Length: 119
Image (cartoon, rainbow, N blue to C red):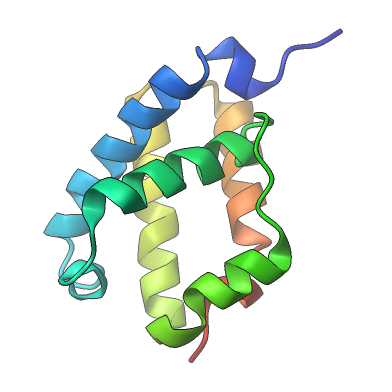
């Protein structure tokens, strides 16, 4: 049986490092940083590690309804989502993930745009 990207790249340990590097970029972004001013980053990174693990085929399941509810009050707009996708893609590439895996993971994130963008 073929391994998922989650399995191929080392599971939660590696995904956690990817997520930490991603948020370093996010917090430096003029577009994104404002969304995280009053956020418990430790908790967010834990949740985001689980979510990215799901995108990579890992053993986690966030439902569409959960994603919608988590982002509803945040007022995320398309420009911020586009910036997030760009930074996320860069981070995956920084970790030298295979191009096909980057495309797959970013695609999984992109299809969730309607659940995350609220304005």
